[in-house]
Image 1 (tube, one colour):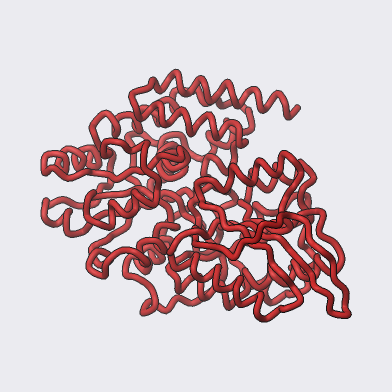
Image 2: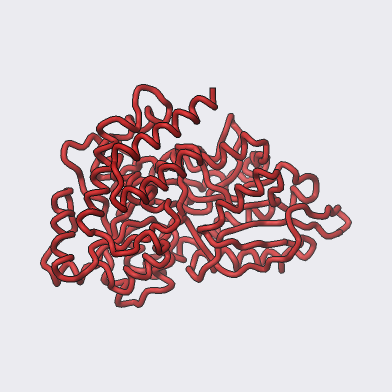
Amino acid sequence: MKKTWLTALLTACMAVSLIGCGSGGNSNSSKESGQASATNAAGEKVKLSIWHNYTGDDLRAQTMRATLEQFQKDNPNIQLDIQGIPPDGYRARLKTVAAANEMPDLFVMWPGVMTKEFHGGDLLQPINELIDSKPEWKEGFLPNSFNDFTIDGNTYAVPMALSPTSILYYNKKMFADNNVQPPKTWDELMSLVDTFNKAKITPIALGNKAAWLAQSSILSSLGDRVTGTEWFLKAVAGDGAKFTDPEFVQALAYLKQLSDAKAFQDGFNSIDNTQMEQMFAQGKAAMMIDGGWALTNLAANASPEALADMGATVLPSVPDGKGSPNSLSGVVGTGLGLSKNVEGARKEAAFKLIYTMASPEVQKKTLEGNQLVSYKVDLDKSKVSPIFAEVYGLLGTVTTTPVYDGRLSSAVADVMNNGLQELLMGGSPEAIAKKIQDAHEKELAMAK
């Protein structure tokens, strides 16, 4: 039986990403960093540093910030040094301190590659003790939720969200006004591009300034349509498949075809994904290919009328494609990583905060904030936007596929992301495929 989003999570991870997998607003940051003073049972202060990327006004970010504020009120003996870093710069900042072995005590961390790289750098400690101490909480997560945070039997975080990355959002009114339907085939998508261009409407909004979005939200799913998942996993493993193979070059060619046909607005490499979402919400584009993280941003910033006009589907099938056309690329959401340097009473306090941020109550608030979660929560549709309810239903009908930067090393993902910016500006699919393969072979050689 095929597994759906609501019955079994994939074992891939993003980047979102994120993807954009969640953003949020101003933090109660102090000038102090990383290390913290210890406490004891007598009531001395414990101090913990925490980094997050909840730096906007979306509802999920507001929920997470409010949770941190309430935690500080409820736990006066635990002092938090909070630093909120905008999503587009968060990964780079975290990698910088990781390279210097100056990690904060707690930090938002992605599953998959990031977890493996931080584990390989001896920067993390497992949280099995916390998870096993709360069996009802542990059982409340969807199947496979911990897989990409687990290495050699040790789990290093629990997910606080769920992030499909390749949803095709569309404006129902624009489609009706132009007498067209959501595309089911590649030819239908290209026909839509032509139709909307003739109507002086941007066909697809794109915000690829940070370079990851074209890879995470478009190519990860489009590539799977062409090659199938098995080919990609073999290419990652260096086991009989290469990124210079004709099928992957064809996937790049399809993406270039969209750009060549003027599917995206001018300057798409100069705006970020939040600006892209605003563009779509304001009715300045007929479609947008984005992740589930967009839902909470849209709910916070789009008008009720705009939200009612939004629909959602999957990317269309491609000719002779080897992958399932009824699928979405995606990952479980981010979790809080714990520095290996946190010990004693500070570790007890850190466990308490990790549980609070991913507790059943906060998972429910997160879902009602129009952010998908990896926890079993009944959805009250009256508390979410119409487009969130539609996407929630869609996830119960599709299979899942890996996000490329969830399986590739950070170095290779960077080469791919930069290559896609080049491709969308007219670059050669063959030349970019070679750059990706060369970088990947170098990483494989270093791993031996």
